[in-house]
Figure: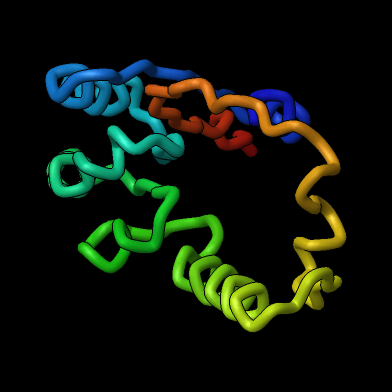
Length: 142
């Protein structure tokens, strides 16, 4: 993300938050930096702290982008990412086919062309506790 931001002349700053107090401090820092927006990184810690994140974003009047749609449904500005309900539906379809005795099948789901079981070993996910914000370059003067 940082390389993409630099490519279009944007500045990014990464702030770490692993506790409730860290989240409060991160929002205060973002406000002090006069950031244009905040991007919340994908992490289960942030997901369970959704109410705190949304309240702080409103308090600091900070446009915030969240990683799950539940944040936006709970009052956050906007979210990005996939639809977990759709994932569960697809998995349920596969499980149903397997339980009916189907041995091998090629999925019609677009993701099946990218990753199929056995293609690559899964890597353990590292815990991320970062919040991000993006600050645009100053507006050009005339």
